[in-house]
Amino acid sequence: DGGITQSPKYLFRKEGQNVTLSCEQNLNHDAMYWYRQDPGQGLRLIYYSQIVNDFQKGDIAEGYSVSREKKESFPLTVTSAQKNPTAFYLCASSIDRAASYTFGSGTRLTVV
Amino acid sequence: GQNIDQPTEMTATEGAIVQINCTYQTSGFNGLFWYQQHAGEAPTFLSYNVLDGLEEKGRFSSFLSRSKGYSYLLLKELQMKDSASYLCAVSLRNDYKLSFGAGTTVTVRA
Image (tube, rainbow over all chains, first blue to last red):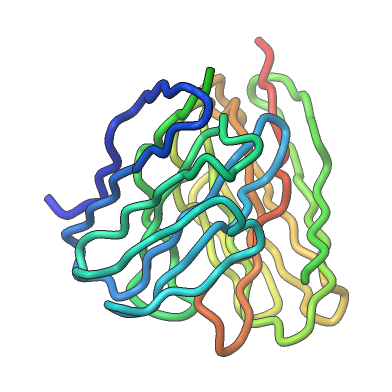
């Protein structure tokens, strides 16, 4: 079955450490996205990529980095520069503009 | 950016109807999505409106008025499993990304 996989589901890191969240899709979607969700808030866009080897900053890109070396993969690195990294991170993909997103199951990151 | 507003919380009784409103202010509007998100899980697609009017899909219906910048999601014959957060999201012309509202938490009581 086609889908989008995020791993791990739960992640704990010490303050000051970089951490990379995985996102893989086998839907053959060109576009991929990373959103952050905090309690009581909507989804805020971190980075997105419309095509391989290209990506753009979203509304809250500071302290994050991404790569898009393969169509299937869009990993997100949360760097030590991100001041408040504890959150629920959602990866999504879409086949093209104005198409519905398919979401991964999310990674809950806790920095202690 | 886009301003997307929806109520924070709503409570209703099992079997009743609830209407979740979403207003938006944006330029280059293309369409509006509704997603359902259960606590701790990923959002799932409910509906997509591009043209004015009502789209019905079983117990769920979604309405759009482009001129008023307004949409609503109507949930009929509420069931306990409908307790979730409902997210309104706007897409723009010539843009891939969606902008989301903060979500409306619906609690269904017996």
